[in-house]
Amino acid sequence: MYINGHWLTERSHFPVTNPASGEVIGEVPDCTAEDIEAAIAAASEALKSWKQTTAYERSGLLYRAWEIMLSRKQELAELMTREQGKPLKASLNEVQYGADFLLWFAEEAKRINGQTIPSARDNQRFITQKVPVGVVGAITPWNYPISMITRKLAPALAAGCTLVLKPAEHTPLCAKAMAEVFEEAGFPAGVINVITSRDPAPVGEAFCTDPRIRKLTFTGSTAVGKKLNAQAAAHMKRVSMELGGHAPAIVFPDADPVHAAKGLSLVKFLNTGQACISPNRIFVHRDHAEAFLAELTARVCRLKAGSGFEAGNSIGPLINEAALQKVEAQVQDALAKGATLYTGGQRLTDGELADGCFYAPTVLAGVTPEMKIYREETFGPVAPVVIYGDDDDVLAMANDTEYGLAAYVYSNDLSTAFKAFEGLEFGIIGINDINPTSAAAPFGGMKNSGLGREGAEEGIEEYLETKLGGFAL
Ligand code: NAD
Image (cartoon, rainbow, N blue to C red; front, side, top):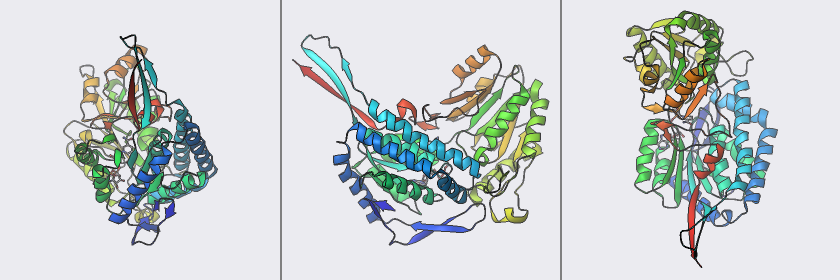
């Protein structure tokens, strides 16, 4: 743990394991109530001077952190593959994506502009100034253990906030490595504090109730997000909530089914399906069903599961046994209710796979609204295909979910694509595009997928208050 510029190790520890092998790869301190208090106190004290720094000073430190992060790209990616399991190439991409936020917000720090507003009275002037929210409590998930940290910390620091970060208990080593990057970049003591905890609840409670924390930023499940949001509301705290998803993907009759199958096979199995923007219902027009399923199945059959360090493996482990059981239960439920299995559908236990939590990349067709997989986030390597016809209102079917994070559309008709973009109730829509994400573009969801946006110019607003000055001359 890193509190007030010091590394704390004299605590009881909890182990960190490699989900591909079950091997213990390290241990981290389990924070006490005093540690939580010390971290919040340090961030609160550091805020006094940090909020007075110039945007250019904060920008310079973020820029330096960006340089250090990229110089350690390989090392950070290898750690991520060991701790989280994703293939090394995907880890390298994530470190790059994570670093992009440092550079983007190093630049945005210099664009925290206020306004002058005309008054109806000739002797009155209005100006606004943007000021940091204050101390931020940040909680991050394990599936993107580095980029979810920089996506929150970079805008908070750029805005002039100080913070306490609590990373997921499955991936604290990535968070520790990022704290080292920030330390080396020269951020003053107390500006960034990292606490690790086997039990996240007491930290969440402190973030929601302690009056010194002015803003909670959370990425994780909708269930936990709702709980924290309710707790924070009682204390009138600002919140950002990046929660679960259940992305639809629509293959329209005017799309190329082979091209669509190629794209969706890539985005669906990214991070073994453990992504909030992973397609969870793939709507394919019945004219394309055969061609689409043939291409998708052929591609999925070629995906290899195993250690992320072995070239050619693209399917890593699920994070733990509970995640594996959830996927298994959803697939069994779908099959019992009439879905057709094209490939996969079981745990992988051959050879060294037996030591990890591996599930075969799976294609299910004939998925219907009665099946659990149609409604619940899978967070695993399963592509559920729903066949629709001319009489179906496919946009209404796609919108029929409590979530509203990402959606995908395949169409070669501009008008169809535009109507889909306008009609879908989701925060991020990829039109013939499976990677609609960038540090420069707003990321976030509607409905039960959360509140607020990360990245882009919106990202820094989440950490700023607007102050109005009215001047009578
Ligand atoms: P999770 O909600 O179990 O855990 C996320 C974080 O919350 C972890 O740090 C965990 O320790 C912490 N946490 C858990 N219970 C808590 C409590 N009672 N109080 C305070 N903190 C608590 O989710 P997960 O399984 O780790 O992550 C996967 C989920 O995250 C999925 O639903 C996924 O869709 C979502 N996610 C969303 C985005 C996004 O940007 N919208 C990005 C990545 C992941």
